[in-house]
Length: 365
Image (cartoon, rainbow, N blue to C red):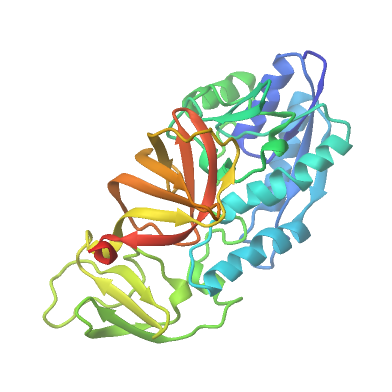
């Protein structure tokens, strides 16, 4: 639709900049919209001000208007509050999934449409096909950068009038286009992590909001090997930050978190990186969100339980209460409540759900 008005979520990064450039090259009338999700703190860990200056430089280079909107209140109430509640409950939540569902494809999309956009675009590495039966979310051509996992909890209707210009491109191709177009941020490094955490130490950040609850650390034989500051500061499979090296009678090998005993406030660890309590072939999601639900479900599907994980062969079934059970062909390491399981039928992402229950190989015996 040449001449249609597209508002691009311009973040200051190279991906959204190339998205805006591509759309302009294709004949769209393009505007940029910069979104603030986290108010700057005095320590300066969040780079929102720097990101805005980068976005403004890109908009000036492309000759497009740039709007700015502050969604920090929505982010705190819809994303950060759930993030803290999840950790308080002993889970390992994923704020990036929540951000896309609760902010980028709700208030952000709605604000862009109110500004007069015919379409909304972002720099996500994903593809979307608008078919007669509605939008279909498809994996990116660049499997290493594919971001459908982060988009898998977005309501299907919120993909209406959405474009993903980078879906058919690889990251090196995007970098090359940025250089060719002379975009001022073509060499800017990709952002990593979560804005409100930045480069600071995670447990120190979390302790500003959650009260420490110290307890003991036990090995898989029940022997006390140390103390922890709180179960919420640890997750399954973790090997750093345990401070329990040099145990008498133990091998000179890393320790791994293999379980949390919330009732006793005990963290359980082992030096076996393939301990049965770390591995599971079955999990469930109590409230699975479908972008598209095939009827009936194919016998063979794929899933991933974390971003950038290679797709894992599985089968799935729906219980009478609507929960989804997933059976993997190969054991999965460190599947944990609070993270999301995203389901795929070939190239299509069918949806996702927050993992509510995991059956480890130790439990299955």
